Each structure stands twice: as C-alpha cells, then as structure tokens.
Amino acid sequence: MADEMVLETQQWLNNNYGNVPGFEKVKEDGKTGWPTIYALIRALQHELGITELSDNFGTDTSNRFDSKIVPKLEIGYKSNVVRLIQYAFWCKGISPVESGGEFTEYTLKAIKELQSDAGFPNGDGKFTSKWAKALFDMSAFVLVSGGDKTVRTMQQWLNVNYNIYFGILPCDAIAAAKASIKLGVPYGTIIYFAVDVDVEDGDIAGTVIPYFEGVFGTLTGYGFRVGVYGTRNVCQRVIDQKTAVYAFVSDMSTGYSGNLGFAMPQDWAFDQFFEYTVGSGEGAVGIDQVGVSQVDLGMQYVYKNTSKYPDWFFQKLAAIGIIWPMLSEVIKATIELEQDAYFDAEPFHIYTELSEKLSIGEGDNETSFNISKGEISNSFYEQLKDFGDALSLSGDDAKTELYHKLGEIVEGGVFQITPAPFKEKEKGNVGLEVKIDFEGEKEGKTGEVELTIDVYMNKKTIDDSGDDDEKDAYDKLEKITNAKDSEVKSKSAQNAFYAQFFSGFVEETSSKIGAAVLAAIALALLIKFGPIVIGLIFV
Image 1 (tube, rainbow, N blue to C red):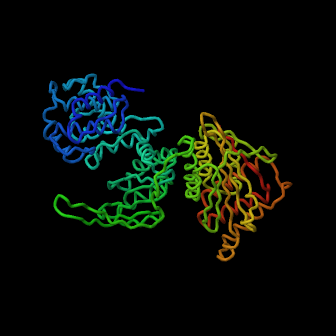
Image 2: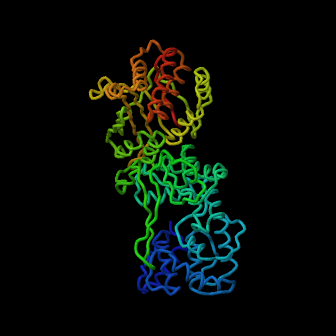
Image 3: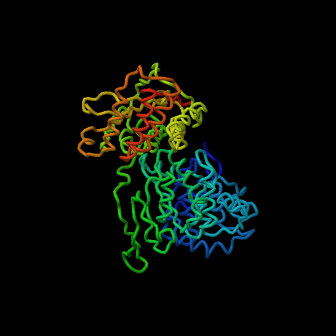
C-alpha cells in the first residue's frame, strides 16, 4: 500500500536531483525501500558538496555533516538538508509533521522520538552524524512482528553504553534474520553476533546471557543458527547456555580480561589472532588473520526459494535441524520437496525425506498430548517427572524444553517416534525413526507435508572401534527394537519411555558417553514397561 508522504519524498528527490551526476532516480511508488534510502543518502551527499556519490553513509559524509550542518540545526533554520531529514523521518515511520525544509519544534520532537526508540528516553535532541546515519537507513527502532522484547532491550542498552564504539544499533530485535533472508543466506547458516567489548565475568550473566537467549529464540524461529563473537570467556559462557553453537574468538584483543587465563572454547569456529596492514597512507587497510577449525564452512551458495511454498515453511525445517544439531547439515540438504538426503556421522547413519504424503496413523500404542503455544500439558510434565525421580535422572527441565521448542516450531501438526524401519543397506543396524508433519500453503491451498528422519547405529563401526560404551548402547537399543508388543504396560509408562529416550537421543548422540547414558535409561524403562510409540499433537 502506497504512503503519500513516501511518494512525495520520491517525487521531490527525482525532481530536484534527477540530473545530478551519480544520482539514481527512484521508482515513484510510495513504498519505502533501500532504493529510496540510497536516493536520500546521495541527495544529502550532494548538498554536502560531495561529487562522487555513493549509497554508503561513510566517514566523509559523517565528517561533513558534523562540520557543516550540525552547528546550524536550530529552530528556524531552513535548507534542503533539513527537508531531506524530514523526508527520512517519514520513510522511517516517524512523523515530523512537516516537510517544507524548516527546522521546527516538530522536527526536534521527531529527533527525540528516534533517540527514545534507540534507548535514550531523555534524548537531548542533538542530531549529530551518528543519528543521521541511523535515520538514513532501513533499520527499525521499534519492536516489530516476530521480534523479541529482551533482544530489543539489550540493543537499546548497547546503544546507551557502547554507541561510541559502533554507532546506533537498530532496535527491532530481528534485523539480522530479515536481512539474511533478503540477501539469500541459506537457512541453517550460522550468524555470529558480536560482543565486541570487554564484558567482565561478573556482568555476563545479567547482560550478555539474556541478550543471546532472545537472539537464539528469534533466529531459530527464522531458521538460522546463532554464533557468538567475543572474548574466550564470553564465548564459552554463551555456548554453555546453549544459546550459540560456535564461537568466533577475538583472541587479538590480548588485553581484554575475558582472554586472560581462560581456555580456548572447545566449540570454536574462528580464531582472530593477528592484524596486518595492506597498503599505506590513506589506502592502508587492516586485514585480520583468522584461524579456522572448519566446523563452520560458511555459506556455499545464495538461496532462492523457487518453490510455491512460503519461506516460513522452510524456516520450520531448518529450525528442526537447529534443535537437533546432528541433523543440521542433512536437513539443509532436504530443503527441496520430494527429496531425500543421507548424512554419515559414524557411528550414526542419518536419512531424511520430505514428502507431501501424510502417513502418520493412530495405532493402538500411540499416545497424544496437546501442546499449545509451546506449552506441554501438565499430565505430560508429571509423568516425565515421575520417571525422572524413579531413575534418579537429572536435567528433566532441559528434556521438556525440547518439546517446547518443537511445539513452537511446528505450531500445528503431529510428532511421532518409533523404531527405525528395515533398510537393506542398514541390515544388522538398529535405530529410531522420527516423523514430523505440519501444514504448508501451496497455490493458495493448505496441504500437509511430512519430514521423516531415520537414524541408525552402525554395528560394524561400533564393533571395529572396540568402544565398550558404544557397543553397550547398541546392544540395549537392539533389545528395545526387538521387544514384543505384549510387554507394553501402562500408558503412563509409555508416555515417559520415549519422552526420556528421544530427548536423551537429541541431547547426547554426538558423544559416546551420551549414547551409553540414553541406552541405559531406555533399558531400565524397557525392563519394566517395554517399547511404545508416542505421538505428540501440536495445536
């Protein structure tokens, strides 16, 4: 829908700067977008006396704005620059009431509103280049749909305390996710969020951790993984909270307290350890030398959704890979409909298939639970807790959190887990099959799509390794798979059995010890209650 003030902005820009060398005329459609913002920046540069116009609000633009414009910005001052500022406010969604080029009380009020949205509720109204750069940009400073209040609060906090280092950050809580989608960053890619200051150990829990909790919740919903950039201590603390998967370590900051006496995070992807200079004088460029562990190979292609399904549909698929990390790569390969993929992560063989054929049934051994807005029914909690107590298990809150996350991702659909079916290629191996079906919209019609995940334990690899823990885990899982249906006991037992088993599998399959732990849990439950199938209904 066209905005009349944005349309006026576009028309005025084309009429006044259309013949200026380097200025690119903008489409007059009344819709705010980067072309209009770039046109505003180029027009501002022209008014500042810059002849080589660009889309970048860079150092030269900032310096000239501070020296030529800022001293004049008082009530009553008239110029084309003021008019450009007013038009930029209209495009930002903040009303300066007027657009005639005179700096008025209304213009000052708009400036203070921008400052308040950015985290400065008592803004002084001084409109320096750092604020102009934030205004002449598409970044939002209000909480937008899909944003997280905690992330926005932290963005505002960072603006107030650290704007001298990196300027004014957007405060929409989802800028990174939407920008990545626009740029074609493939779903499942790791996006690193920087803590580019020396946050001391005692301050991390109250600042960095809640920020990354919000970032993780938001980014996961959009199908992206989270990485953390910062000192060794900050990176490790964030990863320990499971709100980031890998670290980009700022080891080059040798004087930072977070790098003194702290070990290198085990899950590091990049290690920034030295800077050297290329060129000289004004043309000198600092180049960081970075060590690479190769756990994160970055993006290999630009993603474009050529299917008839909306982006949110594929975001759900990618998000499933995020909450089950060992599936992250294989699910990225299954992003096209009616395709299957295989991933070898010895001793595990993983298969996925995405199909429009719904096959989840309602067998006698299935039990369903309602999950609404990520909240599991109280009965489920009680059953899971009872079995945790009986087996002296810990971490039950973390286990139920898995189901919260699945519910938030799937929203509407069915989740089911059973022993993996026989495959000729996997003869002699055992494992689990997980099916998740959810709705997608195609050509205006709603259809159900099913994601099938088969994970097998490779008996030959386990036997050859001589690892007793892996062999023990395989033997116990084999007993579960081959147990007879007649051994199945109460429904409550059934509910807790696969809830414990599946959550343990998700959390622990990447480690040998974990495999043994989850199998021990499964065997203890098998002896008492036998195998079951559990279906979770998401509403």
